[in-house]
Image (cartoon, rainbow, N blue to C red; front, side, top):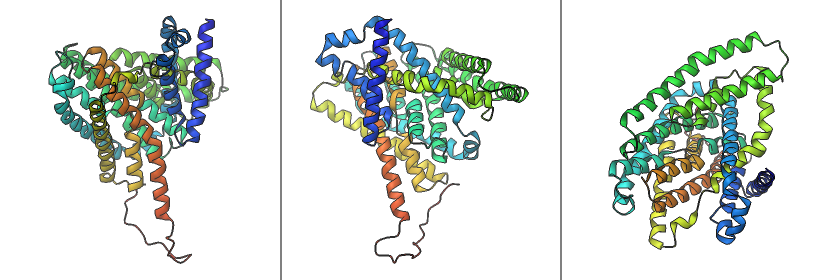
Length: 428
């Protein structure tokens, strides 16, 4: 236990320091937490000081660390779901549906074409082309639900139109990704097509029960007990129980525990003072200790030495990165423009949807474990994940600066003159 306390303290302090440094550099703190995990893992500390890395993070403590990290993640996703402006998202439903579908379809087409080029050289032994192509297409289409949520929170745009659309589209994208992952494993011969179909059906059933069964029930309970003082133990107990049971349900279904927590947060009444007080009680420890531990734990399992030093492999890696960025960003931006958003909101939404983060790393780990992709392809896709995640914040800042410059009168225009209006469709 003493060693666990030491490890938790080290991870918490290092993640906080790296997050502060990244914030000064214009990156979200989450990048500092991810890079801290990588630095403390085999890529840096394990390569420079292997015995020290094994002493700091002994193998027998990793299951405990993972359990604490997963607990922090699901509570954080509940908080994101609870803070989601459902009314705003409902008003932008047409945009959300279009962007979600296109932001999955276009990258999957690009990934399938890329797989056709890579299959002969990089496919694992005994892996058929359909499974390999579907998995590469899936890797191109993922959006990092938890990392995106953290970026939106850090930049204080979670309640805006773009923020609400981004988190909604990312949730739909990742639920689709887990269903497609079930199909990919079925094609790889590791499960049956019946199991993949069952996952899709049960996910739809779970969403229906939460929206039309649990949500009205919670609303009636909140109304009935509205006169009770906030901050009681009963509200906290019911809240945590609902989070854990919802997470258990989606994990048992086969998608991921975080989606159950997020959906439970979305159906819990937003205006209830008891819920607000209970959510505030769990927020501090989750954001400061448990959530950084999740990012650090995941980063510690990333080893850049897998890619080697062969120039040709870096060329393939660059191709993977380009395909991932162009298909995801262009597809999301184009869909948002067709749905009626202006250029600034469309480009910002495309930049947010291009963020892949640790959801991608989870998917890649499953593909590597099943043998669908080789360690070399895994390393390439990890590099792509980090590049697209790190690109999100600078891209958003650049888009905001360019939009502000367009709204500012040009230097040659007389002061007080009316700027020439731009023909742009701006949603809302």
